[in-house]
Length: 604
Ligand code: GLC
Ligand code: CA
Image 1 (tube, rainbow, N blue to C red):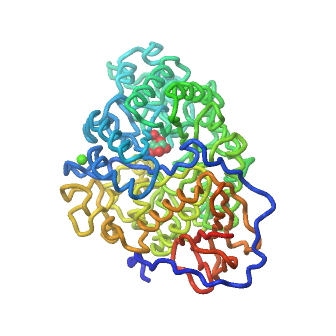
Image 2: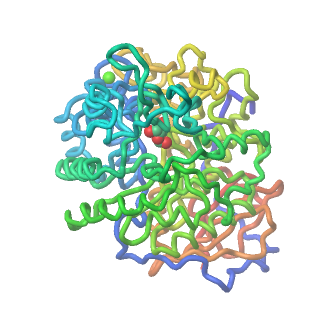
Image 3: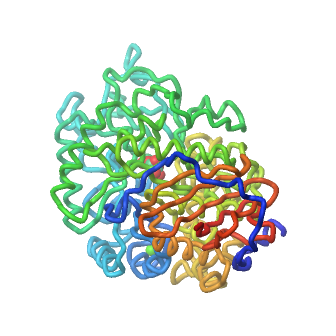
C-alpha cells in the first residue's frame, strides 16, 4: 500500500478459527480496577466528542464553522453513538488564539452566531439525547475584555489593575520584565504597557499570547465573576464545563523566577532539547517540575467552590473536567477529589509511545491513581492542541512528535498511522471510565502536514519564529461530502484552512455504510461499548501473552466477560479457545490477531 492509498474499506473481521497453543493465557489473580457498576453517574462512563466550532461545519459560506452549522449536523453524532459533545470556545473574541481569548464570557462571537443559536444547539442536542459541555477559560481573558480595557485606562495600583497581574518592571527604570517567566507560545510572559502619554509603564502577565492577560485569582471579584459565568451557562441548560488551563490560575507568592519554559503538551524546553527520543520518564510518579505558575495548591479552593455551584443544580449531575497538564499522576488526580472536579484529562495516556509495556503500565497507573480519589479515569488520544493520533502513530515509536508537522519535516507513514490509530482507539474505548474523541478521528483523519506557512494562524508559529510549527494541522475543516466544493464543509468552497487533497477519501459520505471503514468501526465500537457496559466494568490484566501484547478482561455485572487484546508485536497472536470475536480494529488472520490490531472477544 502506498502512503496516499490509505485503505478505508478493509474487509470486516471474519470469525476466528479456534486455535490451540494459548492454554497459558489466563486472568491475573489481582483485579486492577473494580467497576463503578450499572447505576454509576453518566459522566463516569461517558464518551464525549470534542467539536472545534470553526472547523466542524459552516452554515453561511464564509469558510468558518459556526453554531448553526453544528446544529444542522448533530445527527452525525447521535448516529455515531457518543453521549455528549464538548464545544471549544465560541464566545465573543478577537480570535488571537482561536477563541481561547475571550472578550465576553456571556455572548457568542458573531463569527459563530448568536445566543439564540447557542440555545437552539443545546435544544437540538437534548432532543438527540446528547449532553453539552462548554469550554470555560478562567486563567486569562482577551485583552479586549472590558475589564482589561478598564485596567489599561486606570493608573498603576488602581482597583481595575488589581483584577489582572500588573507589576512594576525590574531594572533601574522598570525596563526589565518583573521575572523570567516565558510564554507557553514563546517569548516573554510579560508585556509592557505604554501609557496615554506614550511612555512605557507597568508590565502585565500573560502565560500565553500578549492578547491573553492572566487574571488575578487572589481577587474575590474574579472568583465571583466566574461563579456567575458558570450559572449563566448552567441556566441555559449546559451539562458541564471543560476547564481550560485548570492548573494555571494561582501563581506562587512573590512570583519567583522559573527554572524552565513550558511549551504546549506540558513539555519543558529541556525535554525538547533532549532530542527526538522519548524515554517516557515523565509519565512515572515521582517526577515533578516545580513551576511557580503551574499546579499551585491554591487552585483547589477555586474548584471546590465551583463544585458547590454545580451541586445546586441537582440531578442529573452537571460536571467539570480539568485540562491540567500536571505531573505526576498523584498530583493530577487531586483535581478530581470528591468535592472538586468530576474528571481530568489523562494526558499520560495520550503521550504514551506505541509500545505494549508502556501502554499496559499507563493503563494500570491511571486506573490506580483515579481510584485513589474515587474518580473515573479518562482516556483521550487526540484534541485541538496535539498532532492527531492517526498521524502521530505513523512514526516509529519513541520518535518525539513535535508541536505540529510541516512539509520540511519527516513525514508520517499514513497507512501505518491509521492502522495503529484504529487499534489504539479500540483499546481506548474498551477501558473503564470516560473517553474523549476529537472531531474527525472517527474518519481516521490525519493532520495536514503541508500547510503553507503564510496561512498558519496558531500564535505559537509566529512567537517562536517558526521553530514550533503549531497546531493548525489538526484544525483543518472536516470533509463531509467527497467531490463537493470544500468537501461539503459549507455552502461555498471556502475553508479557513485549506483541506489536503487526501481528505476527499476520508469524507463522511465515502465511509457511511461502508463495511470496515473507520467511521463504521467507531460506530461498532461505541455500540458494543454501550451494550457491554465497558465504561463501568472491572478490569483485570491477562497473563500469558508476550510483552508485545496489551491484554485484559473487562467484566461488567450481568454482562459477558470481554477479552481485549492489542497486539503490537510482529507476529500474530491467538485468542484463547472458545473466545468469540465481537469487533476488531482491522482484518484478522488465520493465526489470530495480527500486528497493530485490537480485538474485543467474548470469553466464557
Ligand atoms: C489550552 C487550550 C489551548 C489554548 C490554551 C490557552 O491549552 O486547549 O488551545 O491555546 O489553553 O488558552
Ligand atoms: Ca460560518
